[in-house]
Every structure is written in structure tokens, then in C-alpha cells.
Length: 363
Image (cartoon, rainbow, N blue to C red; front, side):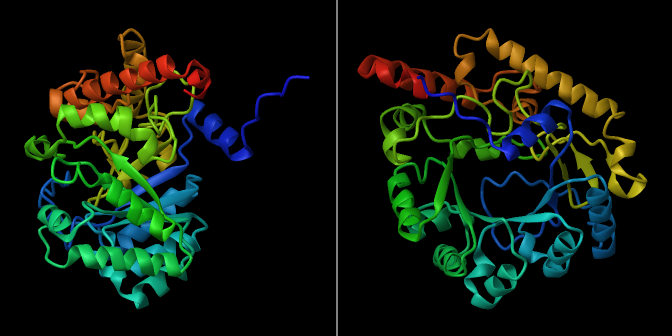
């Protein structure tokens, strides 16, 4: 008797159903643009407007909860730089939503801060790291001592039993330190995610792209290095925010949404077309299924998938419409990072099949 295919978990079925029906499960809330780092490739682009007050953030969170969102990610800027961070995070939990925190970890080097975070029972804390050595990390953060504080934060969070996702954007400065970053994560029992795409700033500035890793490195990264670096795992062949086999390339304006520090509702953190201001609507149900912006974004996601399906490397693309729009001027334009990565991933899978055809089923 042949083994039956594994059935998706109840949570996976929920995610797939919500994606298909455009029911958002998650909200990413940028509660402030303030930050204690000066990262050279940061995509934030504050425009000088007044940020939401804490009572206004509470009002926004109530509307998010009333809409049925399951979890909220608090980010920035640096979320912990908001003077009322713990009040805001506590309100997320009081409203019955799960909490995720994105941070650079600098303030979490203080065990007292981590103790207060642990009391919130977050489902995950994501920390960014920019090198395996202080010189590399701090060349990007431009804050002396930030590397040691980030490592201390990881140790504190781990000791507190908090789930951590370590995220490492790959740049030309740290591309030679990935195995050391992986080893650091392994030592602490932490999962690490490498991001091979440096993006433009939200205002369209292309300055951060000067830090992109080079093409020769990317071929090695996606090819001979990837499986070793990721403990045998193969390169992804789809966007992380799109359910398998869906007609849309991503979940922008479908699986979740973003709220910026001014209260603007955006389809996602990368695709920043304003939908409405959270303070100016009675509830999210007023715009979610009627907004022409969201309708266009969802249609574009289907068009993007259709376009990629016709591309010679289309099955190997991780594609972001927001990056395409900011960098190329159109959300369906193929931007260089996506094209280079897709070619490298396809080459890696071609070599894998030549070396061991039995591994094709793992792709």
C-alpha cells in the first residue's frame, strides 16, 4: 500500500482559505519611525508628518481587532523606541490578538526589558543582524557597540524561552560571513533567515542598492552554499507570503496589511499605496472589499503570477510588486535582484537534478 500524501495542518488550511477569500489574518503596525540605529540601507522614509499618538494607536488596534485579525506585528523604525511600547504591546494582547515584535535588539540587551517582553507572551521576536563581527555589523548600523548588544539581546531572549527569528539581510559587506552568522544562530538554538534582496527606500531612492551582494556571490549562495548553509534545506521557489498553487504572486492586500506611523493603511509593508487612514474610517470592513486600491493590487498580483509563469525562470522567482514599483516604476516590471536570483535558483535546481535525480521530488 502506498503512503498517502501528508494532509495540511488545520492552521495551513485556515491560511489557504483566508488567502483565497482575501481575509487578512495579520497586521504589521509601524508604530514609529524613530530608531536608535542609522542603518545605511534602511527603507523607511519619514515625511515629517505627525505620528499617531498612543490613544490613536489604541483606536487603530481596536479597529484591527474588530476586523478579526489574528496577530499584530509591532515594528518601526525601532518599535521599542516608542515611549509607550509596552502599553501598546499590552493593548494588542488585551484585545485578544497574538503579538510579534520586529526589532534590532539594541534595547533588549537589558534583561529587565526582556523580562517585560516575556510577560507579553509574544509568539515571536525577530531580530536583525548585519554581520558576524562587530566591525561589519556596525559599518551598517553606524552605532558603536550595537553588535555586542544585539548578541546579548539574543542570549537574553533565548534564556527567557522566547521564540526568536534571526534575520540577516545579505549585503556586499557581510556576504563573506554568512556561515559565521549561521554558526552564531546554531550556538543559541535560533532559526536564521537570510534575505538576498536589498530594496529601495520607500520614497523611491535607490541609494540602498549600492550595498547589494554581487552576482558571482549570489550564484554561489543559491547554488553550492545554500543547502549547507541551511542544514540541507533547498532554495525556495515561491514567495513566502503566497500559499502554494495560488493564482496570486503574493498576499499583498489579501493575507494582511500594514499601518504606517501616520495611520495610513497600506496593502503591505513593501507595496505602499495608501488605501485610507485608519482614523478616518469607522472600521476596516468599510474599505477592505470596496477599495479600488486594494482591488487593483489584488488584480496586479494575479497578473504578476501570470507573467512569471511565461518567463523561462518563472517557477523560480520570488517577486515583490512593491520593490518593482519603487525600483522600476511599474509593479509588474522585472527588477534585477529578482531576475538574478531566479536564474541562480534555477541553475541550482538543474545541477541538483543532474547530480541526484532522486532529489527532484524535494523541489
